[in-house]
Image (tube, rainbow, N blue to C red; front, side):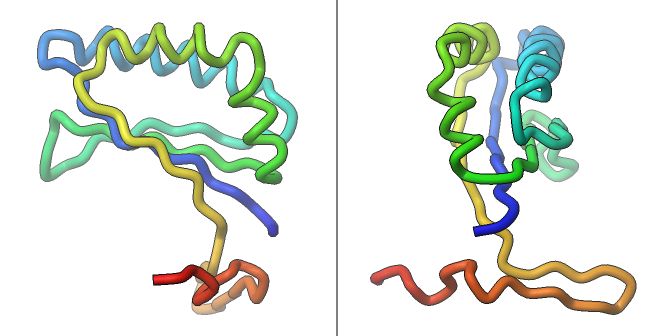
Amino acid sequence: MGKIYTTGSWKPSQAGEQAFVEAWAQFAAWASTMPGAGTLRLVRDLHEPGRFVSLGDWESLDEVRAWKSSPEFRERMAQVLQHVEEFHPTELALVASAEQGEVESSARAGVGSCAS
């Protein structure tokens, strides 16, 4: 399956935005030490400033599953979620990318294999 991305859409409580960012940063610092973890980022939505999106790249789905099932995951995630009104996590597989005019696609991404 190739590279996997974890994302989250976060809406922290208005009064708790800074606490959320700090808690997320601590969570991400820990997560970035897990096997297969790449760069983890937190970005703010410019059209809806109270919404944040987290992005993480991982070497494999098995490594994401191992991270999420680790004993510390639930406890550390709870430290972030205490500052959040809404959270939607997603795991994504790379389908295609483009860089400097070159396109690369993943034939094994499973496009079209989902039932509707």
